[in-house]
Length: 337
Image (cartoon, rainbow, N blue to C red):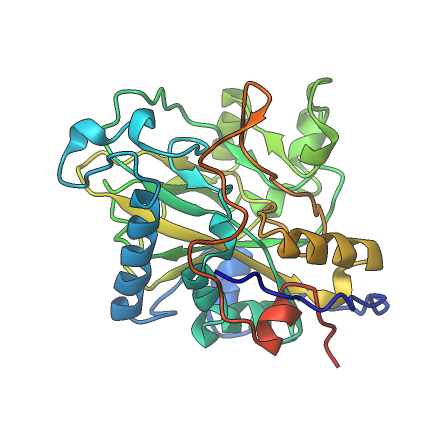
């Protein structure tokens, strides 16, 4: 399979315009729910048939490593039959972020449009984020809640809008996103007046935009009227949430396999020249990044075992994406006009 040649012409980022929508404004659409609650479910961002196609692609990709994974045999649903993942299902290495179906989903008009509406521009960057394929009932996973936000206490205001594109049903027992409704509104000026914003001294610099909450934090949010809810959605639905919302994932409590794709877009105008260069370099290596599209640009790199690159690692996707101008603009490789 031939390598993709990407032009190396990332240019200086324009000055930062005032692109962030005000939560005090009334829109008379789903954005009012988003700003009030810190999240929203966009119904039918893609068709259910498209969602099934992407789900099939993702599940075929996971079997492509030849480790004996059998979706009809739960005894194979363990690390012995799976490539490396985080939290028992987040696949961000092995060129997963740049598989053709992942990019096909990212350029779906119905996926991009809600982000365009929030940010007030169609000149966006997209994250090189993970696919999540969670196999229920695994005995080798010691799952526990990890309530957190993907935004630093020092960073104020709406700065990142995260997303989940659902390829499987996310019902009450299907696993998926748990979110503290209303917590985003308390993030900038209240929670860290009550609690210290300091992170552990051994917290890596690259995790600057990340904060883990304790049981005491959760209880405080609840005392303020916030409610921890399971966000339910159907195949093809897009879940959006403000990165200041306390959230974490729940492991499936039934036998259904969870398949979702993480997507996040932000204005290209918010990226610096250096971050655009980093993003383009990572794209050329077909590697993944964080939930952030425009900053916090660092590569997930290759998975290593005892200091050696995992033999399951890949130098390029199993199926190369179709390179278009829109894809290159979203990747930060080509500038917008």
